[in-house]
Amino acid sequence: MSETCRDVVVVGAGPTGLALAIALRQYGLDVAVLEKEPHTKREVRASIMWQRALEVLRDLGCADKFVGGGLPLRQAEIYVRGHRVGGHEMSVSHTLFPEPLSIEQIATEELLTERLGELDTTVRWESEAVDVRLYADAAEVDVRGPNGRAETIACRWVVGCEGAHSLVRKALGVPFEGERRTGLQAVQINAEPDWKYAYKPDTSYFFFERRVCLIASPRPGGGYRFFAFVSDPDPALVAPPDAEEMRELIARAAHDAALRLTPTQPLWLNRARFHDRIAASLREGPAMLVGDSAHMWAPIGGRGLNTGLRGAHNLAWKLAAVHHGWARDALLDTYSTEQRAAATEIMRQMRHNVTELPPAPATLAAMRLALPALMAGERFSGRGRILLSDLARHHRKSALSADGAGRAALRAGDRMPDLPVTEGGRRRRLHDLLSYGRWTALLVHGRSTGDGADLEAAAAAVDRALARHALPAEVFHVRPGHRDTGRLPSGTLHLMRPDGHIGLRAPAADSRALQDYLHTWFTLK
Ligand SMILES: Cc1cc2nc3c(=O)[nH]c(=O)nc-3n(C[C@H](O)[C@H](O)[C@H](O)COP(=O)(O)OP(=O)(O)OC[C@H]3O[C@@H](n4cnc5c(N)ncnc54)[C@H](O)[C@@H]3O)c2cc1C
Image (cartoon, rainbow, N blue to C red; front, side):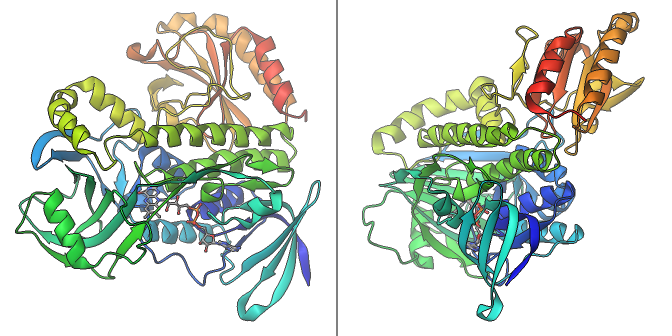
């Protein structure tokens, strides 16, 4: 039986499928979300939400609930062979979310499901996509529903958010390029420790020992998530570790022989191995891939879920713009190129992230010597902080980034920081002017109040150009604080994408640059 045609079928109600469905519903699309399981995941996986992902959740209308349900992490204490080598400050500036959040993936999926419900959409549980047929501008999805009931859903778009074994990826015939990660496994337990380290709800511990990197992160429900990357001498061993094995490992890595460990309920003991893979393309015609169906890797740095959320955030506004006829189809291809570039960069960085890989003895000795000085310096710590936050990730090389305003600290493709500005005579946060529901043109005025006259003609041209095109947009005149004139030089236009990245940066008087940009990507009214 085939039901009426839906705008989008999202296959998989993991975190990325849920986030994508929320964003598409906010844009008014009719979305069916299929999930083969009867409820959200019960297994423990991701436990950290980095700052950029929290900004994404704000755009999805649910960041407050995450902040209310998680623990902000401000500090990481680093120990090498039992010696403290430094503390790593996690807070960053120019965002509404200075700290990352400790929150279990179980809670993440529940909160996203709740938010989707607020948008009058419920997940179709126990509904497994069993076949996908793709046409030039439509798709059909065969579904096995509760009690084996079969149906076919016709749709304009289908998005595979169904994880590693993606059916949509197979229907696309897209290779999942990469390999199994050898020599590395992760073991974990959620437990309450009785040990020599102080409990601070905002502090994680990192312990490095021979061939072990152990991370202890405080959990919102109490106790810690103990997550250890260890070498993998016996790849055939698949059974989870038992509590005593974990106690011995933690006691050795933390140099605390007297450690006692009480597993928290529900009992969670896990052994995981990983693949590093990226799909060769994330979009062909009516089908797209998001999250683990598009890219996956060992969870070094806690990137998988976070990157999937950013992918859903990148895709949804583009899909909505093409679906509503505001933008040309080529806009959708930029999701694939931008997200593949982001995933490739993350995979490269995490393969070389010595701060979470189980160290060989020689590396351990070097860490013990070098880390105290490195961590005491702002250069190393600051770079680490910003890298982990994901706030500096950019799309500078994307076809959608056009830069014609000379060199500056901020370039087309960059995420716009949440800078203080004056707008309409009031002090505002820049992010309060941006919106995920539209494009935003920022006309930047100089520091003195009298220099706005020459921007008036430019503003009229910007208004006219935007009014001719179908994209929803709003224009603001902003004056940056004196510290930020290097980032927002006066007399420039920044055309902001809905996801907070700079699309076009040009001299405000260069109306041709704006017209060309709009003509390339958007349709006329
Ligand atoms: C041990 C471990 C620790 C991790 N730690 C972190 C971390 O700290 N930080 C981080 O960011 N990431 C972490 N990750 C990665 C993170 O868990 C994944 O990146 C994330 O779950 C991907 O979300 P997703 O929605 O793309 O896919 P999934 O979470 O895999 O969800 C896919 C959903 O699709 C459903 N499905 C599958 N096939 C079908 C079908 N045919 N029809 C209908 N439904 C289907 C599945 O049941 C599932 O619910 C970790 C992963 C592991 C294994």
